[in-house]
Image (tube, rainbow, N blue to C red; front, side, top):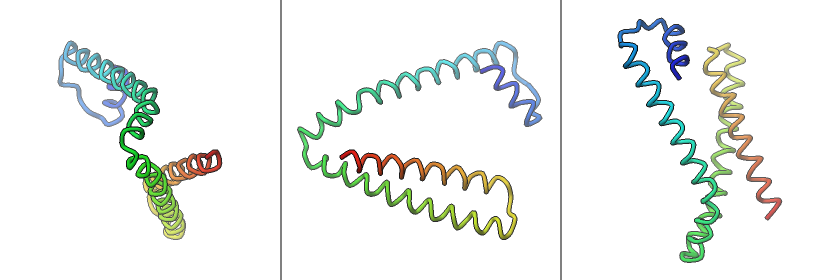
Length: 125
């Protein structure tokens, strides 16, 4: 983490005003925080199916809302896909900035991933 902070400081031409100890403490805190977030996300990932089944058994209405959320995700993914395609077409015509095109490509890739996962779930179900 300290190397990443150093690299970002060099890349953005930021002068270092903190002491060595303070920089190391910040780097250790960030490393521990990221580690805790990763562990928590793994716990939530592993426990999500069990929790979803438990909630659906106790509250069957939420099971129907879960199916509705798949439709909403599909509509959002399709909307992002169309917006990105339109934006890409306009950016090629006007030669806009590189960052906008990268953002569009990221949204396009994310929406395609959501579409692929939802279509796979529909085919399996």
